[in-house]
Image (tube, rainbow, N blue to C red; front, side):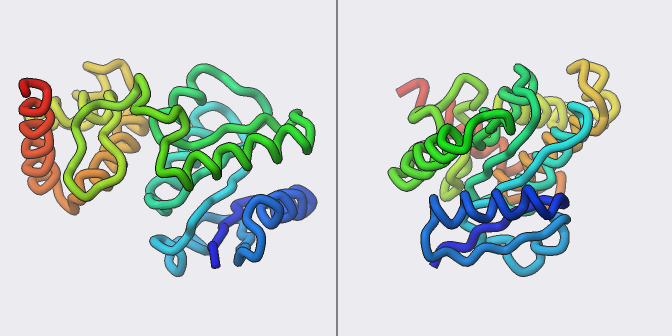
Length: 213
């Protein structure tokens, strides 16, 4: 039985999201919560899909996307929001998640969800191939490579730069750098800076060897 997590604080919309989830994932176990932390401890590695509603400004939306990515690294992720923007689409592409505009019709939403699930079931990402935001650096046994931004951040970590220095050099906010580092550590199966550096260097050598072959 698939386990589906819905992150939504508005009761009325959570009912709609639950109905969608049960249509796309029949006979699934659906959990509804208003907060990521409430369900993270029990379903971190068991959730098959997470459906969340994004509110607020761009930074708040990206922060919630990063929080969901950190909390449920193996789950497929679907986010609802008011307006699609290039910045949000890039973040979604980096994660391999799906963005759906709330103004879309119920039928269009259902179609998007069904197609996303079919792609995931076939073992493919959202674009059916490694997308333009993904690097070739991937640790063996991990299903996602680092994104280009995560690789750029790790390259600067190796040089000994602090988070604030990395933010200035890449023209990013410190919060965005921290989010990239959290996700990079997750994809590098690292619990410390030294372990992340060691695993990153190993994965990068492997990627370079593949390119040279």
